Length: 116
Length: 115
Image (cartoon, rainbow over all chains, first blue to last red; front, side, top):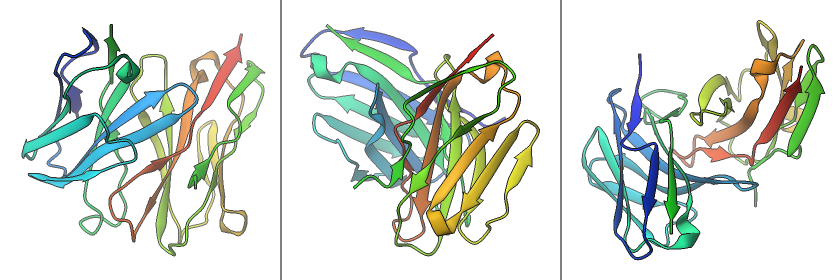
């Protein structure tokens, strides 16, 4: 059974803290994604990575950074957490297009982050 | 510009009614892929279906059916004889060949099935 696992289901952090959200996939997928989900706004892409050490900004990268040192792991970093980063964070992975003509994204269970 | 539009924010139906969730997409690519996902209250997005731009055949899977129409850039999802377990947020998504590896999601439709 394919798996994308996020390290925490719920997280409460203080304003100004550095926060790490971890995501691991066991499907040998090239692509990995971090989305943020807010009511009425759907899923917004923060960053994605198409290979180890490669990353590209999504629609809302400000205040975030990412790290992909190994193929299976993709970390989202909030450099200095702020209350407006309180949200649901979803990690996903997929095969690279070209490797497969079409492929869906597989999602983790989500991390609900509250910044107080 | 929004690539995927789900105009219905919230829908409520009574159990056993049929319901259609609308999805309209926008792309200039000739090769693209469309998806539907279900997000139950537990939070994890569950993949339901994938469709290629060159395959306009409609698909039926049990109580679920999908109507893909390139002429209207729509990929609508119908649940027949809805059940309480269908209550969830449903997302439509687009992936384009030319923009490679990104998925563009709509804002989702929250479906509530009332017993």
